[in-house]
Amino acid sequence: MKIRLCLLTLFVASQWALSQEIGDYISKYTAENGKGYMQPLADVFGADLNSGLFQGGRLPQVGFRLTIGVKGVMARIGDDVKTFKATTEEPFSPTHTAKVPTIFGKNEAVSVTGVGGTVYNFPGGFDMDMMPLVIPQATIGSLLGTEATVRYFMANLGEDIGDLKLAGIGVRHSISQYLPLLPIDLSVGYFSQKFSVGEVVEAQAVYYGAQVGKTWGILCLYGGAGYESTEVTVTYDQEKDVESSRVSFDMKSEDQLRFTVGVGLNLVFLKIHADYNIASQKTLCAGIGFGW
Image 1 (cartoon, rainbow, N blue to C red):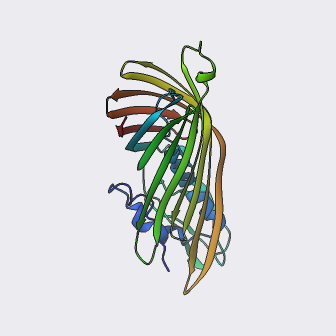
Image 2 (cartoon, one colour):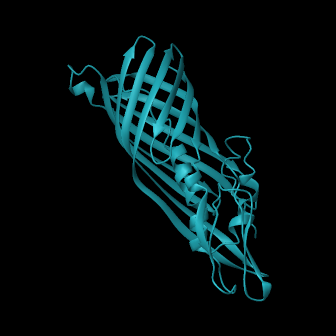
Image 3 (tube, rainbow, N blue to C red):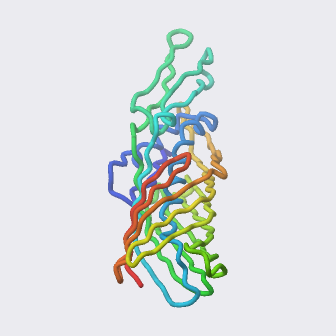
């Protein structure tokens, strides 16, 4: 069975031809080459998921607050993650190692020649410079200076793929409530999210850190520093001639330092914000929400 990983079709009807063809590409690889091909996707997708989790640092001790909205995230894909070194697989001979495209690399196959004029083709990528994501989110609080954030989305992609699911939850707690002379708002937070596409992709993203903010009327400047990690498991059938074998591997990007700087506007029932996230993978996030 040829697998299609519809990672973003649910969220954005964009240029993601990736969602339609990636299964055909990766099915040509074993686990070792598959990791090299897919690892940039795990890093970039995790960076997208860990964006837009907070807006500002102020958390009142008591009082009902509810905001429902969406976050739009864009990650820039650098040239350094568009290639990797892959090795030819049996029964091709002799063994060759070549610099080939990752999933984000050029849409051009790389070929090497072996014994008797045989040719081994490494698949191309999708020639992407940006990776967009749109995420629904709701935040509710505040109890004892604590608020909770929830993300959830589910859709059926058909019998061949199954359900796409996104579920996440996080909490933030005010530290500045214990420091009344502190001139800024200070809080700490922890967020965990899970994402899956049928039985093919399972991902978990975690972020924890501290947030600061300063509010003047409707304007809020905020920032944050923390750590993020992502774990992704990919399972697919590798096609060899008329047979196929099951391949499964894990990819991790652990404890990467992440900084956030942003600005928000609180217009009665309308909340707007934008922030820039600096980490191993940089992202730009904008959000809009309705609430009080």
